[in-house]
Length: 196
Image 1 (cartoon, rainbow, N blue to C red):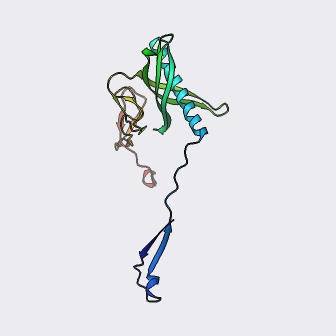
Image 2: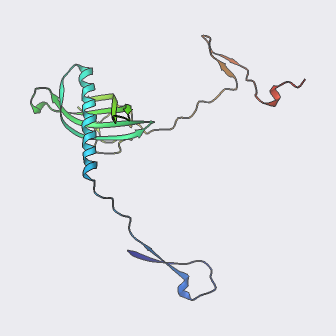
Image 3: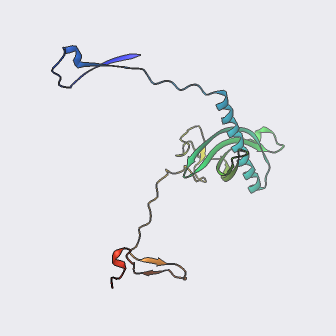
């Protein structure tokens, strides 16, 4: 534990000179504990779940059969009102040797979570092999270990910005016809009601 002496700048008229100094004791912030085995197991399970969901989407979309070789890394964040995942994994064509292994990127969203069975259904918005130019950073992941394509994914590619409400006109817009019509606005309050 370290101690620090700081001069008391208050204008005191009593006591001796030593009372004008305050002594603060502080200790360095505690170090975070190493990840537990349960935390590591949870991360590995998340890597496998997201990789399998992304690979299933890729196989169905492209009428191919790839099999999972290695779920590399995944990150899940609450982003724009939903839980989104980015993941990298290695996969190879089914029945082929490992020399044809490709690294993939997938972006998934939790579409439905069943609290009773504690299972989630994922909606995959992007899954593609990483070939060519990649970037190691996105606003959602913030992790340089995750490889991202330069285009082709939605969340985290750009910084999340709050959206302003559209400006309101002074008139009301009537719905129901093919062309919306702007009519005069009617003030609401005591001046609206006639005083006969």
